[in-house]
Image (tube, helix red, strand yellow):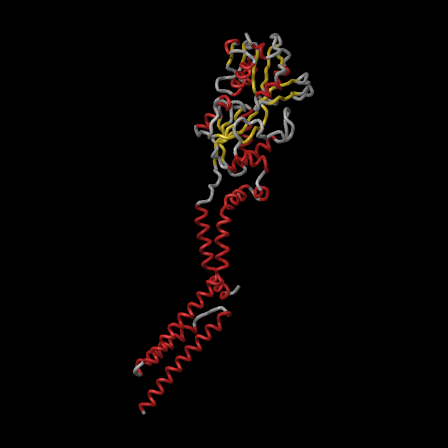
Length: 436
């Protein structure tokens, strides 16, 4: 494209382009905010399943240039409190805890991600065939504020075991397992994944027995956030045949909870992280079971619901995260911009034609005034001034560049200028002849 063509293009479309660029600048000022570059994730106690899960999710998010601070916490209740007080943006929370009174309208779940069975281990020397047999025993039910204590207290209350009917020890996890093996307690109610090393240790201990929860089906019907799961014979250690027979367990689930105002793009990334970490199944869950909105006891966020219904967005399937996110935020500008651009593009050629012809018409006004002034001139001096102005007008029009389609209008104007000049010259000649 040569210089003349570029100039002609800019003459026609320069104004619409400038208006569109200005519109884009204004629109970007009101575009939805970009995802945060840094978030805080409340995990759990060091060495626990929550801490490991939090680190796995943080690694996934860091691949997308999101800095993640993983907090060490006391557990689910602590995590919920951190979300409510804005100390954390994301947290791992045991299902059932929010229903115990910790729920808040400012938080949302994006789904359960793995089972956390309630394991009821007891010493073989102590007869425990059902939960009611815990009465009168020394029982580890977790520290105050922990998810295991909330769940254990609920189940024991439902089966009629009052808090003063047993001696509660505020132990959880590996500490509770160690106390049980030493004989410091009779029963340990613990919540943990099936792959934890101390779970295998308790299953292998000949002095320790795992209670099969006969009420698991009933409990899952009474509490939607609980599910009955089967720990199959040999699934923990096939060589040692651990456990020795199928065991029924009741299991809450770990769910990912976020602040309601967390950017939807980050919520989608968290679901993708859960799919990568937990979608392939486990010792207790079939592949594809997690992540799921089914066991969550906190309302599912709108973005999570959309993801479960439709999967990743169309743009996310095609483009990298950063590009897809930008386009998803920018698409809302497309309709107003199109409504602005299309009329401007359609109006540009007529406007350009009007501008060219208007300039020619203005010259015609000048020409008509000069003709009238020339005819009315009373002496040679006035007529000479008019003639000089006609020469200037002729010179000005000779320097104008117009598209080929407007050449006839310009040449017609130049011819008319010469015609008026000839009239003025003829009048001047007649005046000189009359004097002679």
